Length: 326
DNA sequence: GAACCGTGGCT
DNA sequence: TAGCCAAGGTT
Image (tube, rainbow, N blue to C red):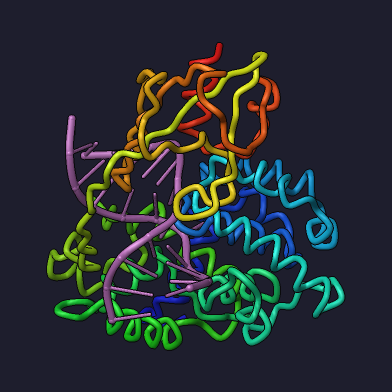
């Protein structure tokens, strides 16, 4: 082993210090690895595990998922966030069932044609299932490569991505793709973390340019974001016979989930009874109680408390409603 | 190319 | 506390 080969170094490191007991690591079948990869997009391992176990238990095969009731898919996804993933997941299963006869592909060129699978997720699936090294560029790999090679200063986001993809291709080993991919994730998640990286235990310490110059915390460059405060959205609670009225949200946040109906203008028979602040988006929901039958409720579906518990309702709203109606 | 999409954890 | 970030993809 060449000492200057970072890929070999982290593969060896992974065998001793990496994670080996994650639920989806116990198989090399494409379907469960795909489900895990989609759930893991922008979502931490700890959050994903219970959702993954529940999902695989209910839909053990891609054909089962393809035939699944759309509503049930969203029920299992509710609380995970980024709900377009659930929509794409269901669509992808149907694409695999139709175009690939229910056999999940493992080639990059096939994978990237499927809904919800981009270049990085395709690489992750192929690495995991075939053991053939396939480039990945997720948050972990970006952070590791950016620091190792000191890439990022003064680059636009797209230029940075382009350079990092090239680096990801160059640095990957010729064998042990599965271990290597897992090694990059584990290193990024447990050692080469965003704040206060643990360089003293990093297998790449002596090759890392950022570490040599003490610039770890400056790489990769921070994303700039300018959150736009939004006007509060007024939502109304209609209660009748112990049931609450919800409607399907069809756009933007919480798309395809059940939410309280909105009101442009608060009716005179409504009174404010609470609000939710949606942290990332600064979305504010003003929730008011409407006295039925003075108002005519919109078309929707009436949920009992028990139905509400298992329904595809966003977590903050579900929490509020269960507390309010209890 | 940039805006958009959720939630939980961390400091 | 309030901002920042995480196993990204789509439009």
